[in-house]
Length: 314
Image (cartoon, rainbow, N blue to C red; front, side, top):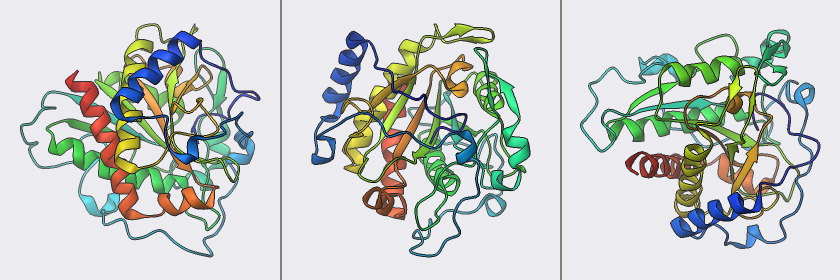
């Protein structure tokens, strides 16, 4: 779920012309609207607000995710800036910078006071961060996002990209939403992808990509990134459905896998192309079975990498 705040009480529809254009791109890339899970789309069920999201995640009691096969931050010998101590290979993404933003931080649950402090997002103030959601068996979103982010970093670096993570569970909490945006901005990233998993009602399935709306106020001005972010998001959606086999969300985005929001500080404060990707719904048993599978998480990382590469290659 988005790390910086809860969703609005009601879901806003995108202008039809924009939605149609994005859906066309997505459908051209990979048939984004298909699949049985896409049938019967309706309004999103309210997700937990910031206070609920900041509660301690359940203690694992049942099925646990398969081993990730990736080293923990302390074992990897890398830092959040590059993710690799080795020279990068020459490839199609040589000279490009990608920032990966793993949603939440596994240690946020131990710092609820700090993450509940509000920060300026230009158009208002929001909580610094939240703990995120989890599966019913206690697999935390923060663990999921780090695992997928590590896999994604490896894939992008193999293509020659310089990759930076906003954090690697290497700090007590956060970073706050304004700092997450600032990291991408200061890196002059060619693309920023924030990795998440949703926490919606049982029966709500599938992935969706959140795009920045046109926002201007205070320190927020997305006018220069709306179009490029929409292109990035549509390409990711198309490749994600093709690589993972997951259908676009059946509860957000009208079967396109795309949703536009103006209330997320991580998007509002970005000055470089950026999207959020909700890879699935952790509260639905069928989606949870995918999210806890190491093989599926590798497919998710590959879908993200393919979408990013497609965008950067033009």
